[in-house]
Image 1 (cartoon, rainbow, N blue to C red):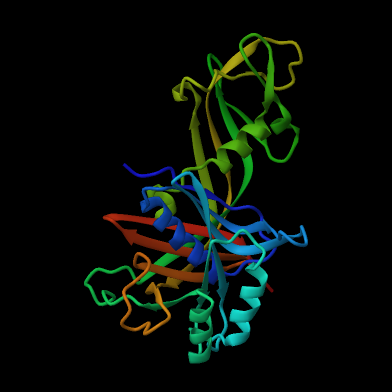
Image 2 (cartoon, rainbow, N blue to C red):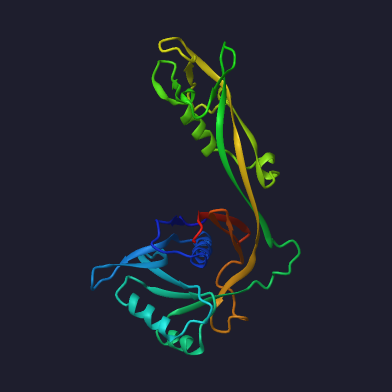
Length: 321
């Protein structure tokens, strides 16, 4: 029985792809733990002397024997190995923070003197190392990322007992109001369209097979088959202010779609102790990660494995200029 692992990700003051990958890997480790564990990116901890908040890249908090244990993880994604300066900087930063164990992760490793100084201070050092199973047949090494920009232009509404009606976007037809059977207003056609597009299930053949470029799209809504939690919706015919309400049977949203496609190569790795990193036992599940800029968005993709459990996470944020 797994413990109650939880994940919190507040809006960070700063972040980078490497930090996010490390946080995702540690979240998977927490999920595999038997402890009640919480993983938080960009966690704000209080300095016991100054009373000020200090940001920590990732915090893993666990309740062990009734005691709260805090593992703080700081990440560096630099081209060169980290030196004693990084070790001393982080030691000083965490001296008065509620950190029980400090782990430093460097994408490029650490110098010999930095490793020696970290050992003196009982600071753990971790760096990515190659996944020795990377040559296994069938291992995921590339994914194709697609983005869809959908611009609704019009909606065709099929009312119960009435002929099909049509309204054009963004004219006032989409402002036509929707009601419950007792006349309670429930929003407008425009809000129905926005909700349908926002909640669109992208796991379908049409979107999987879509090629890059622009074209028309069509989304059908069968409101008669909606879950019980969604009440029947009613609409007044165009131009009627006090006329009868007619139940909306179905609707078809039509518009233009812009599709962007980009290949994303994945790097397979594990996190290992910085001491003899090439041969050290892994301290994390195997994972693969990649990053690609798609239009004005940056996409990060991470897949982790462990205990027979494989999972993926994808994060999308504005591309840095």
